[in-house]
Structures are given as structure tokens and as C-alpha cells.
Length: 361
Image (tube, rainbow, N blue to C red):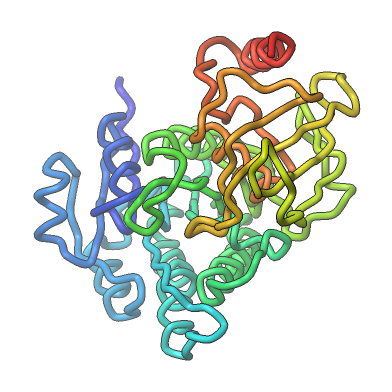
């Protein structure tokens, strides 16, 4: 007998990461309960969704109404708290209303929704497999990874992580797992300069979700993960560095030295030490000719060198992606994430090809 499809509830399904998540689970045969504030437009976007519901996660009444429509007997194997907002709140522009809007949508709403759906999540555990609450957080939710501004968004994602850590403890006896995930720097309406597509982000996060749902011991519950499954530290320390199987960061110098002469241009030069597959003390140099940071406070790079040899092929998107990874993911410098064109084979094979390209540089 064919097993009945599992059911997933996804918030913020109308655009960006939520839209891609919804499309992913529809294409994989799940019963998808898609939600957004505007159910009419959502139905046009996802005509193949199992059901469409209006849901405003910043409104407690909307959450309660949604829960009542589902009813307590509807199993929910997976809840993905994706809906979120990012408002431009710098030190000088921040207002209480901006802070509260982001807290209500990004942190309080996901907690209240998860609580409202506990009966549905418990029904889904009847087969013995854990149900899962997966929360789309952000690297900005890590206190260690902070370069200023976006006060409300950063704090709301930190609050989300804290809420979900507590929830993971309270729901563990019910066989319900709770995790938070960073989707990466994704190109969406909220981040138009993002480095990866929504489909790339979802491919990684859905794998993490699959592992968490297969984790019958709930050992992943309460964790904070990148889309490749690596753990994000709540507070980054030197002891946390270097847990990657293939490479580790041994030192990071984040202070940019302005007005260095690079190829005759006024720019900056950033250096750090990496251990690459046993090549200890390799010197990584990022070169750029523009001190202006982009909208994500990530300076642009125009070249990358290892031990004085340029990585090949070198492209601006590849350099920018690597620099962003350096500044946001100091635990794991994912060399294969650089857009080198090396996209086939195992991770170890891609690493070997990348090192070979360095040697030929």
C-alpha cells in the first residue's frame, strides 16, 4: 500500500523563498498548505497546492482563525515558518514601530503559529516519525555575525532563534523537532543583490529538513543550520573555527585597510589564512578597487589569489560570492560555493579541481 503523502504548511508562499519552497514540495508530491496574506493572488501563483489559506503571521487573530480552519485532526508533518519582513532601520532612522513590526512578523508570529499547530503536529507523529517545525532565520540572527544597522531585523531573527530553542525543549517529549536555518544570501525582493537563486537555497534547505525529519533521536532539534547542514554558532569563538571536513579558517582579518595600491588602483586588500586540504598556511588574498560596500555591506572584489596565484577562472560574481561567504560564514569557507564553473562530482572532487586550478594559476 502506498503511504499517504505528508502535509506541509508554508507561510509566506507568494514570493521569494516561500514561493520556491512551495513549488518544491508540490513537485515532490506533498500535500502543500500554502499561506499568505492575500489568498486570492496566492491561488493564482500555486494552482496545484493542496489548499490555500489567508494568513497574516503578525496577527494573532489570523493565526487562530487559520488553526480553526485546519481543525485538530489534520496532520501537519512539517511547518515551515518562512514569512518575514526586512525594514530599513539604521541607527538614525529606527523607530519603535519599525522594531515592533519586525518582531511581530519575524519572531512572535512563528512562535504563536507553532503553538497553535501543536495538535496537528502531534497527529503527524502517530506513525512514529517526528514532526518538524523549520524556521527560516538568517545569519543576521547570530550575535557574532553583526556589522551594524538593520536593528529590528537582526534582533527579531535572534529572538526567533531563542524562541525556537526553547520550543525545541518543550516539544521534544511530543516527538516534535524544531530547527532554525539560514537560507544564504538569496536573490529576492528583500535582497535584490543576493548571490544565489531561491531554487539553490531551497535545494539545500530541503535536504537539511529531510535529515531532520529522519532524525528519530531528535539530535538536530534546537539546532541552527546553514543550508549545507553545517551548524551556525550562537556565539562564534576561536574554538568553533575549523569544523569543516575539507578546510578550516585559522584566522580572519575583517578590518579593511583603505587606500592600498592594488595594481595601480586605490582600493583595499584583505588577507586571511586558510588550511586547504592539508595545505597549511596557504595565503588567501582578496583584491578590490572599490571601497564602496553594496547594500549588504559587503565590499566588492575583483580578484582572488592563493599564495600569490590567481584563482581561475576569476569572475566578479565568483569573487563577490566568496567575499560574502568570508564575511558571513567564518566557520565554513565553502570554496565550492565560489562560482568557478566546477559544479560536477563529489564535494571532495570539486575541491581537488579547485586546488588544481589554483596551482595552474
